[in-house]
Length: 495
Image (cartoon, rainbow, N blue to C red):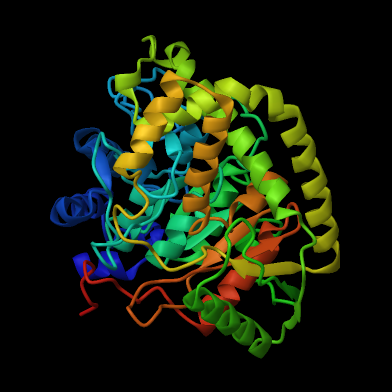
């Protein structure tokens, strides 16, 4: 039965339950067995809720099928943002390790209504601050394609769990690339919807850059879940006007702008440039028109604006943590990089926020104008292939600097530290933030693996509300260059 489980996506597993070829309990038991077998190696799951999930599976079997289009399919939630009543929400932080919400976030309520059976929560960097998943609280999450490499972040645990075959799709959220980065690292499909397409996990943050959705092995799973969490749940699956319905429509030739700019990164690696050229050639072979394009975006200004907004978000999450946890925040409760970013936000974030939001508005107008001339933009997801575990962690000297600026908050020292730390992060993960700032939908598609066998995703972005266009293109690329059966060493071969 495990081979059947791995051979199906979530849509296929739901069909097995509906036709009674498998039970919800059987599929859950397989998912738990997979988790117990591979999680010690990858550290993707940081909270188990097996007993409650077994009870839900039993209720489904007792009441019959039909309780949501994905009824009984095992699922994992990211341990960040999306509160689940009665389950710890640590957000990768020592400060929140005992925090238990009393109500479900709207995205969680919709997930449950879809019938997905949540049996655990996945690893994330502290407060989602970093593009890699190595929280001090739980330890690093590892990439099933190579345990020495990162699965990305902040939805790193979600991507690792899907890539390792624990679940066919998992909850993820994206405030600066946190769906697309791990999807790229783990050879998966990751769609960041348009701003506001799905309900947020809480009150909108400055810049309104975050959005919840999922990471999946198949395009149709992403489309179906988006239908169920964005207002189409009342329509029959695949009906006209739904995202699943859009996958049934013929794909019209698209005018695709090929953007080779490195955006917030200084340069793109050879692997990434090869993946982009490969994707452009594949799209052209499918009848799409590819044209090199320059964005016209001032990426230095965009990057500064992003950091200003990010620091204000960090300040609120850390220094106002008591409003959520009920406990006063203290330095020892947080990683030094998170604590330092919060103090940077306190020092000058609020003062620069208005200007940053105005820069965000101008950049949004510029990218919207660009997308009025192209159906889709093709660009990099990451500046290079997955990095090694620990490669981006602060060095001893950097940690010393961070402690110094929180003890003696001199603005020149703070700006110097922020520049150096952000240069380090953006050198690898500086290609996704633009579309969080503008709110346009964007996706990472797994079309390329490098010579070392590591996945290198490519990114496509579309006009606001253009998820159907992206999903149609992704499904066409998936059919032309199937990735579903490409399995990392931790996933058994089909037999």
